[in-house]
Image (cartoon, rainbow, N blue to C red; front, side, top):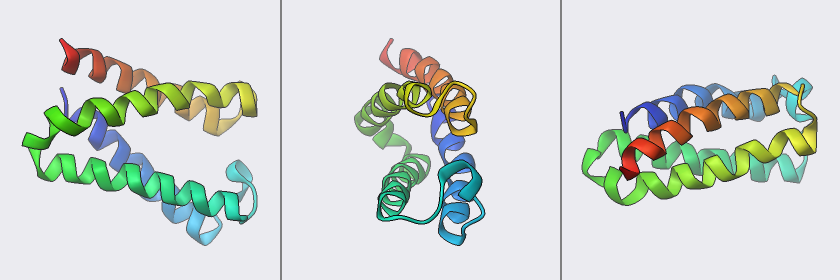
Length: 108
């Protein structure tokens, strides 16, 4: 169960980061701005930690709860800022639900 969330992060973030970098995500994320580049950095950090957790299973006990807690905290905020129907908000809610279940299982 602990590997579900890092796998989801990698599967989602690789195409999202690529799309943000090359401009194919403009409809969902807006045009290229410094703020969007910072978002790419944040997403890349989540991707990097997730990849490390997949390659280093013993690190899950130390790193996974913190990573998931941050994601479960910020992702449900997006509908309030973007609107409940925004595609990024909808995706974030689904991902937050997956991460909440993983976090609950890890913390048992």
